[in-house]
Image (tube, rainbow, N blue to C red):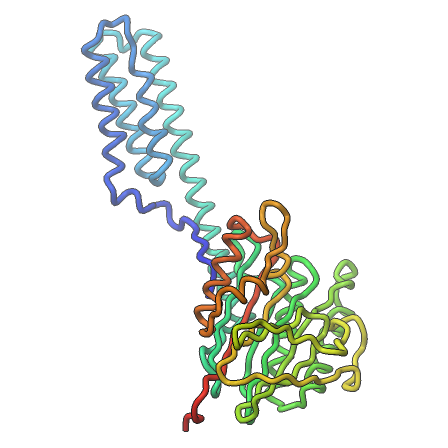
Amino acid sequence: MRVPRGLPGNGRPWRLRHGLPAVPLALIVAITLLDVNLPTTIHLGPFLVVAPALTASFAGAGLTGAIGFLAVAAQVLIGHLHGGLTTPNHEAQIAGLFVISVLLTLYRYARDRHQRQLSRVRSVAVAAQQVLLWPLPHSIGRLRIESAYISAEAEAEIGGDLYGAVPLPGGTRLVIGDVRGKGLAAIGEAAALVGAFRSSAYQHLPLTAAVAHLGNSVHWNTANAPEEDLEAFVTALVLDVHDDDPTIEIVNCGHPPPLLLGGGRVRSLEVAEPAVPLGLTTPVESDYKVESFTFAPGEVLLLYTDGVIETRDHAGTFYPLTDRLAAWHETDPAALVRRLHDDLLRYAGGTLNDDVAMIALTRPGGPRPE
C-alpha cells in the first residue's frame, strides 16, 4: 500500500482529450475578426499572445508552437487587411508575437523534458523501493498481514523506515525499524538491515541471535560509513509469532512498543528490559532479552514507526494513536491500515514530516488450514 503521488509524464496531459485546444483556436479567430472589423485606430492584435500562452499551460511544445504560428499568421493577416503590413507598428507587433511564441515553445519543450527526467528518476525509485521493501504477503501461515509505507518526501518512494516478514518453522518472524539518519545513508542502512534480517531468518537463528546479527550488521556498516554518517543508528522491533501457540516473543531495541487491539481495548506491549538501538554498540547475543505476550486469535497487532506518533496537526499536537484505535474497534488488518493511513494524512494536512511504516496482523480463530 502506497500513497499515490503522480507526476506528469510525457507532456500530453489528460486535458487534451477534453477539447482544450479549441479554446486558443477560438481566441485567434475571435480576436482576428474583431480587429479587422474595428477602426484602424483600435489594435486588438497584441491580444493574440494569449493563445500560445494558454496552450503552453496544458499542451506540449508541438501544439504550443503550432498555435504560436497561427497567432503570428493571424497578426500578419490583420496587418495586410488594414493596409499597413510594412508600417513600424504592425512590424513591431508581428516581431513581438513571434519572439514570445518561440520563447513559450522553448519553455514548454524544456518543461516536458524535465518532466520526462523526473518520471525516469521516479521509476528507478520505485524499483529501489521494491528491492528494499518487498511487498509483504497478505498471509503467512495462519497470519493475515497488511502493511503500508508513507514517505515524507512528496516525490520520494523510499526512506529510512523499514519492515520485513519471513516464515520460520512453526511461525513467522517480523521486523520493523527506523534508521536515524538522512538521505542516501539512511536508505543504504535500511537496505543493509533488511538484507541481514532475511539472511538471519533463513538460517533459522534463535531470536536473540538474529537480533545480535542485525546489531553487528548495523555496527559494521556504520563503522565503514563516511564520517558524517557515523552517528546513524536504528531503532528496531523483532518478534516471532508462533502458529500453534497464542504468544509472541519480542526483542525491542529502542523502538515504539506494538499495540494489541482486542476485547474493546488497546494494550501497549512494553518490554521490561528494552535493548539499546542497533548500531550504538558491538552487540552479543546476551545483550538481548526475549519477552513473551499473549496474542490470541481474533486480536490485531499493530507495529509502527515513530513517524506515526510524532505526526502533528496544525496546532502542533501529536497524533493520538491509542485514542484513535480505541474508538475505531477495527478487527481487520487491511481496514485498520487503510483507516490509519488516511487519518494520518488528514490529521497532518496532507504532508508528513517523517516517514511512516506500519504493519497490522491477526491470527483468525478456527482450525488450522491443511
